[in-house]
Image 1 (cartoon, each protein chain N blue to C red):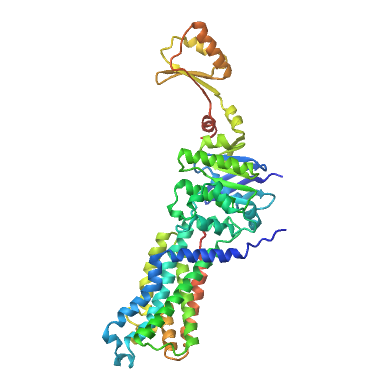
Image 2: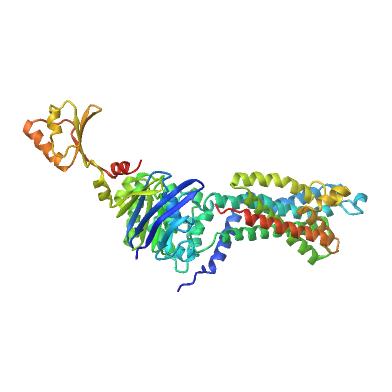
Length: 253
Length: 297
């Protein structure tokens, strides 16, 4: 009897095909790969942001904005770029067409998650590299800890985007819900005011949100320490809850 | 063993019974048509056959396999072209063929397939930039790319111009000639009459007739229609007396006699006997259209 598993090459072909399609979307490429670094460069051109500040315990504004720009990249990938793609695939029957082949449409969704995760990570590296070379921002003091916090933050951002697709039934709704969620996440990631510069009470509240917790963990590890268990726990919990929501609520058509 | 067997299929969406007891079977090598008005349950029926929807009750077999329980194996035997389903907008024809070919262990030669479907010149065109006919041909190629034993073609020629439509029909005949069983969903009479060996007419979720196209036409009450200008000097009584006449009516300045072949023969003899010329004479066969209107409400 013939095996019932599709050829192993199918998963690879889906991934390479989706990667090519991703590279054909200039707007998504700009927002995910370029705009976070651009944000950092624009802020870095403001002279006072390159001066040590007494309010920030001797750190510079630009130092705080490297993790912010990293989180901005994750938000752009997970919440801005990915939901319209996934819900469009559902709405236009692309997932349904694929269910009529030996390959499950989940393969396509997985490829999208992998690609957006990879794009977010590459964009993060670009931010850190430009921060280091252009503005002398020190590389993360605790590299393994920083990487752990970054990976958890990526998982949270993609889970949030996937949950948006699951809750919103149409591409229009996904874009609308995505935009509505976008501003609170930008705020809690510290894009307007870095989390570390927020007043105490607000800061403690924000650190219970996925990106607020990520900001704390990235900052702690950038300064050479280990991320606090509370921050990691909050991030992990959000990732699990949002992934669960996405899986439970997702409709294939 | 029939290639496709559907027995007493029922599927409801909430309170609406989309399919309400449909039974038919498709023999190997046949082009079997499912004909019916919009919303009659045609698409739901074939989606159940493809295993994309689970029936509420009833039994479906594709080459002896249950499309839901044995979904993976059925997808290897059954190619589909679905209504309202698209591809990634920026995917080129070549990439689409490569992608779908990678899904199957023994795909058809997709370069040859592209040639056969006239897609050779469009291999580097992105899906969103293809014309309706090119998209439809690409979907047929994707339905055939797994080298299936049967294909479902749902509303194949919707939105195509007359030439593209005829080319597509020739293509379906080629597909069958290569040994593939075809389950064709349509609401285009001409298409059903031209292509199908047998047709199931579905209306409101039920099969109202299942026969060859000729058989369906024969079932209708009127087989022939004779019409001519109303000022032709013929007596109404003579027309009523023609053998097999079922009705004589006046419509738009024309007299219309409906009847059978015998009516036509006797009518021609009547003209000769009276030495009358019937101006604008037209004799028409009942078409599948008339049969269809008879069979659906």
